Length: 393
Image (cartoon, rainbow, N blue to C red; front, side, top):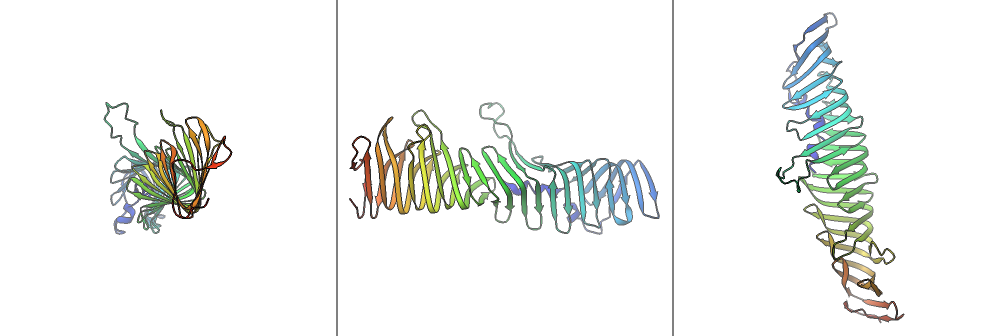
């Protein structure tokens, strides 16, 4: 993800105004033509106008320079460079004494590496608050170079880009907090995030999402009231969802298995990732889960309890465990033939999966299991179901 390298671009071009000592003057280096009003300390400049303040340079074709007040208003295009970083816009202003800078109209920014850029309609920067704000359909992008060999056309997917969109992008350099507000959309390859507000906190290396956040990774989708994504540099490590937590996933069909859909809900949940894929899902309080074949949606397997954990291998559910007033209901098929329905209750229920199907159920503590044969119309014990602890008939 590396968001701390994307949104700080909003302030990067003007950081020289922070680092440059106040005693360094704002110097006009060149202008083809200059008209002055000495009484007002104001000059109208045109033609290859160039200013310098410390390591910051900016150029324009026409400007008004209020020399005594250390202010410059650029009327026809502005180009600012600082240590290889670039900002361009249709017009803008630079106020050294007032501690502000602005750029308006077709704002474009790029960092010195060429890997981070942003566009928008208006950029403002406050030196005192050390805060940059980009508005007007703003977009910030981090472009990751394609590391595959040029001859490997099968593997190569072109540049990998992290994109952040919103109505407002804001970066506070003093606190290391980057924020996107209003119809936020964050994408990177198979990852897509939508919400009303997103905030990246550099110190915690975490991103927080509010206002109807939805995170989609591969074929999985997670929803909730508030989310926290734990990052480690480029890697997404974990996701904590608080309030009305819900996770949906689709397991695609293979040559030997059917396509499956699963859904888990609870007061909160935690998703752990490994190498970009879901490794496990834990659901806390009032945990419920459903699981069914896409081509047999009328046969929905269910489980519920106070706590639930699902573990994955190769993007498929490998095993699951339900604790605290645990219940499960699942349908038993042999090939395409429905044989019956299994219902189990206990303190703990453990389920093992094989090739996308429930293979074994282990019930512990006050265990009770009932198997309803489809044609027999009576209860019987299903082979492969184990019961431990105090059993009830």
